[in-house]
Amino acid sequence: MTKNPLFFFTVVAVSLGVSFVGGCGGGWFASTPTAVPIIFDTDVGTDVDDAGALAILHVLADRGEAKILATMSANQNHWSAPAIDVINTYYGRGDIPIGSSRTGPNPEEWYHDSVPDYPHDLASGNDAPEAVELYRKILAAQPNNSVTIVVVGWLTNMADLLNSKPDRYSPLNGRDLVNAKVKKLVSMGGVWPNTKKEGDYNFRMDGAAAHKVISDWPGKIVFSGLGIDVMTGARLVAQGPKDNPVLAFYRNFFEGHKVTERSSWDLIAVLYVVRGMSNYFTAVSEGKCVSQEDGRNKWVPGPIQNHAYLVYKMPQAELAEVIEDLMLTPPAR
Ligand SMILES: [Ca+2]
Ligand SMILES: [Ca+2]
Image (tube, rainbow, N blue to C red):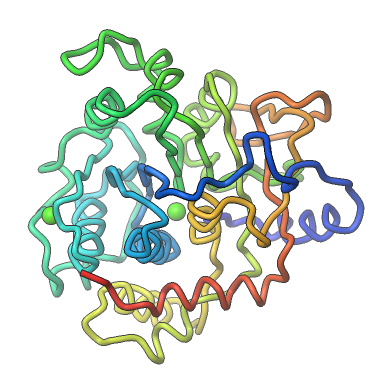
């Protein structure tokens, strides 16, 4: 999620005034026809778009468009990893590995009211393997340059991975392991092209981690700050099946916050990760993001390097339709 009201105006300004590269076939934006192997990393707990994002990732996996290698919580909260397990189980993938951070923030959450009502077998994040260890285990076993990681929360696990040491899974240090195995990192975060006042929520929550990753990641990073004005969840709550825990998460969030729909930051990131630019997005890639430890970011125009940020191509209302159709798709199981 992004709690920054200035962001919307930034998007409008960018949409009106800047010429774009990317979204033009070829290069590292090209989407692949086969299932994209993905690790999903979330701060699930404080907002509901994380639940929606994981739900549509499962639907896209049901359709053969994605393969979910693992699901990770950057949130240390007791309930975060069990909430992930609830969603994985509902979509018929209750055995997907789940890792949980031992170093990340631990903010208040509100999922605990619903998690016990739905099938799962992971009682607490403390019962899950440490996220960084699970990352190393999974990455070591994958082909070179094959894995896409999508982070829809703060970047704690990515910083921990970069800092990790050789272990029983790989003789490589974290940075070298990432360089060998990871094809692309997609980070839902940042204010684009530039922070106006304070940094984006996901960068601010662990500012040191965001700065480390933005500065030191050895491969490609695509940032998505989109979604504040792509509103979803209303049709799911009104029309979805009552045994769907994601519906319950959204309904509780709506009731608690006295709203009827929610922004789609994390769902947009998943849509991009799986389907690429499609006719949904374009991107700015000429330049590089620089960051500060307080979570602020700035785009410095220049030659293409290893960073890009997404820009809308499809109108937001149509994107919301695409996403909500996925949210309403029942599990294949
Ligand atoms: Ca499970
Ligand atoms: Ca999130």
